[in-house]
Image (tube, rainbow, N blue to C red; front, side, top):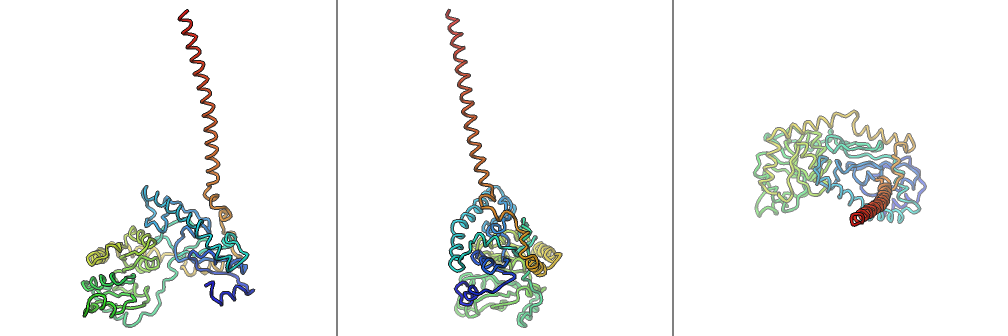
Amino acid sequence: MLNDNNFQVLLQSNKHFDLIILEYSINDALIGLGQKFNAPVVLLSPRPSSAAENHIFANPAPAAFIPNVFSGYTGFMNFWQRVRNLFLNSYVNLYRRTFDQPFQRAVLNQWISGIELDDAMKNVSLILLNSLPGITEPVPHMPNMIEIGGLHVEEDADVPRDIVKFLDEANEGVILHTGYANRDEAEIYVKTFARLTMKVLWKTDFTYNDLEDITCSGCSVPDNVKLVSSLPQENVLAHKNVKAFITNGNLFDLIDAAYFGVPVVGIPKDLVEETNMALAVENKYAVELSNNDLTEENIIRAIDEVVLNPRYKANAELKSAIIKDQETKPLDRATYWVEYVIRHKGAYHLQSPGIFLKWYQRSMIDIILILGVLDIILFLIFYYIFKHIIHHVMKLYKRKKSEKYVKLIE
């Protein structure tokens, strides 16, 4: 983006903006655009609040019950999980300060000179988060951190006729599969789906010829499987014949599944997806299958569990009711707050005073260190006093004992 000629022309211009909306994904250098054009900045995040967002907004995130996005945990952690979560948070924050922030400063100074990154980040007015209670962890937020999870859900998109026909004719039900698969995994899926009585709608970049070459010479994709390169996911999930959703566990997929009350089989590919799936499993509308245990039997067992056990469907419908029971729609909420920032010239009154503190001041490390030093000094003082008192007492005791011994001799 920064290398784009049109963007460079924009940087050299004197244009004025009332607001800058920036998709935020650890691209702090771009936040400098706010100061460049003297405009407030609103961030749009594709995830819930994490270490990066919490740093910008001085948002508290106790490691005792807020899992790190890379942890694979939920908010209910045992002792050792809390220990690991604490160290993971410390590592992420250390990495951010030591490597990421210097890199972002260098990028900012290269392309937008004369702006300090720390000052630019204080210019951020608000963030819109892809989170919502019931699907993501309920965590504390500053007043300028707004949850708009479900904003992307569309119920009015047109579904291609061939897909509608495929869904309507699926009397035994349909499995929607959108998870990424390499060639070896694709072969396992083809063999697995051939054993199902249900139909499978598979969103994949593989073609029918690709899968026939992958599986075996002369083999064909099972008749119950339909391959598509793209589809209106939300509208497919809304179909009454869709019984389960196989996904890698990205947050958008889980929100879609919960919104339409469809149980999930999650096969995560990375740590973030593992964390997403951990909460979905805890909420009992999903089962998780390790990518290392991807076999025909395990996939069928997971599908049977979510399709045949009614608790998964019931819990998915419960999540659907929670998502839909909101005072305002996510889009209306996002619109209101964006306009609010414009109306109030940045709405800086929503900012926490914590953004003006150094990281060690926010954690009160400076106070803890000073108190620790004072404790050590006081300990040494009292130790020195007691040592001399004891020494003096022992000296008196020995003197009296010596005098008593002399009297006995006399």
